[in-house]
Amino acid sequence: MPAPSRAADGRLDARPVPAPAGPPPPPGTSALDLGPGADVLLAVPAGEVRALLVFFHGAGGTAADALGAVADLATARGVAVLATGSAAATWDLVAGGLGRDVAALDAALSWVFDRLPVQRVALGGFSDGASYALSLGVANGDLAEAVLAFSPGFVAAPGRYGRPRFWIGHGTEDRVLPVDRCGRRVAGELRTDGYDVTYEEFTGGHVITPDLVTTALGWWLAAGPG
Image 1: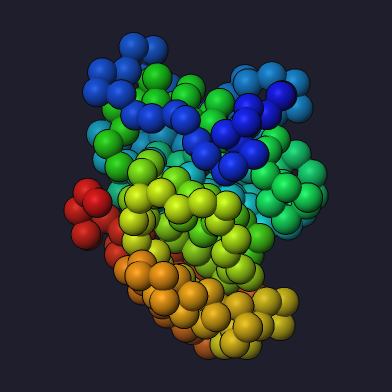
Image 2: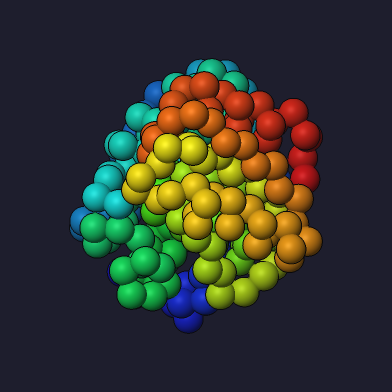
């Protein structure tokens, strides 16, 4: 899929519309047909759709891994979950430069917004996916009202748009992305830049757990639309 120039800047063009024209996807998990090699899954709640969470897998993961981490807990709260797979072993930002994965995500978001009446959007991810969510969140705060980052390594946004809120969770015993030079540093950098950051540490390693997901979702949804 060719990457438009804005994708190289980490910018997403897709936006929710007041009255989606396309047929809504059925409840449950569906694979979106967006072209050869596309790894895109959408989990839709059984009732009213309150919001959309875009969730990014860790290095070496898949869209199915991303859904497995958060979809059941999110859909139980009326949140649809969109997961795309990185074209390489990890996300384009980490693997050489923004572009291809951003373009694929933009196409997936356009598909969803044409079919679901979404009013609230958040980005989230685990490990490399958390770093990706943070970076795209800063670059697309005019779309995403919040970012849920589980054990991130860094934030490297090519630009800043809007003022999203951030929830960051990190294990004090993380040996993959140590908390002192990763979670704590990232939270501090975002606060220095003037962002609203909720930072939580837990006793544990490089993991994402149902309790953490529940906490992060509750933090996001309780605040109301950003």
